[in-house]
Length: 228
Image (tube, rainbow, N blue to C red; front, side, top):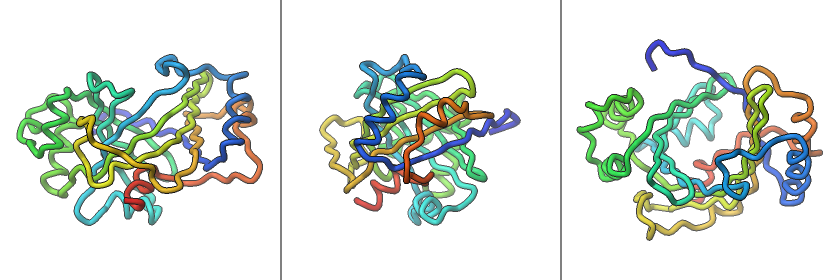
């Protein structure tokens, strides 16, 4: 992405039970603040993920490739007035994310395969996606829906989230169509994610500890693709 500084963040993922969620949520409420963007403490996320005909993003995730990336388009709470194109990159276990805004019309054009306008976009990320759709064959592959409960903590720029009720759009990629039905993505677990910059404060580290849980690499996209 040009000469801009890339800030990679640490990330933990745990698959937890409903009882774990209740216990950790209670501890987090004592030390963290709910994300101010979450109405009622949670919000709905709908994402449309991209992959190529050889399922490059899926295979790299499943195989644990050290350096990988994936593209998605996302909006929140069934409100397509604000849509984000995002690229998530992983390197040596650390993650970073690039983002650009899309209009509803632009997002629908990408879904429909109307791509020429992308090369003229002022957003470098839109132009990058265009090139990879042309030369790598990236295309919309599946819709991923889920509910998120987010908490934030200033020191360390910490963000802790619970993700659950993960659903897949199966073969449907028309993610702006309210009639596009999603179904539960198999027996998907509740996912606890912890992200931070340079350090993770001990008060947060203690709050998210769950006996018997190990850091994992769960992917909502992979869960939905494998189930579909």
